[in-house]
Figure (cartoon, rainbow, N blue to C red):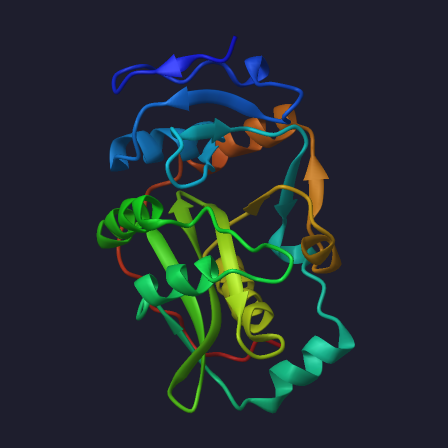
Length: 232
């Protein structure tokens, strides 16, 4: 029986999540900043279609990227060296979310609907959700967004309108997170795309143990500003 959350209900223990569908933990509640902050601190994230109740997930295993394990392919390295792009952060959060919501051939629908945009924009306004953006000739061509807590970054989604645009944003994010002492990036579920960039799976128990330490660092609740040193 999957628990149904009221606005005041705590999340159930992670080990009670479903095996199939993998990680479904609870239903209901809301997307208030308080609820989202509690969820991320606990290793839980929302993922549901428009018109459905909120579905909360904590899959086992969990896909993560350790900053020092980022893989840059030869072709991506060439794209990075071109330098024909500009990286910005937190300058177009709404546009990035809507870019991530654009239907694709492999994903005709989207879970990034207006309720999600409003919820994460509220976190962005609080200085907890961030966008990293790739711009070419004044046009937003790709990027990603996610949530930061302590020394932990939770990646949510990414998009590209030109080849490698989201990967370029990710490389810049990872290098900057390294400089700031971040230790782990949550990638949620396994995909071949993430694996090609160096992400790997951790058992949920290990992920949760690492998370408990990382979220307890002092918060930097602010809009971010990257330095622009070489990412070599």
